[in-house]
Image 1 (cartoon, helix red, strand yellow):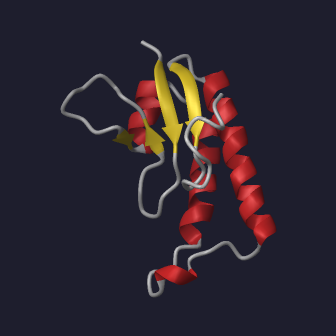
Image 2 (spheres, rainbow, N blue to C red):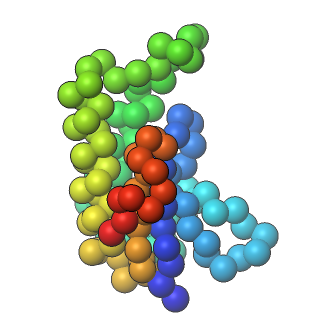
Length: 114
């Protein structure tokens, strides 16, 4: 069963979204669930976790409006790394039919699909 996966970064949220066939389950899955269900290798998982940690690090718990990348170049680099990881996810997982990459929601659904 090949699945469509969406990658969407969010503060204090999981970034893997897919339908695992369980009607009682949500579409948002932990990395641990994704490793098992999507058959992900350790290198890809580590790189996704690093990518997500960089995004989590910009979250300002005191003043949400100040949560931002330090420079436009840093934001662009993070977005590009997410694209690369999404392409790798499609290439490396036998369970993935396609990957819709949304970054942190700033890329419209369906415009960056692997």
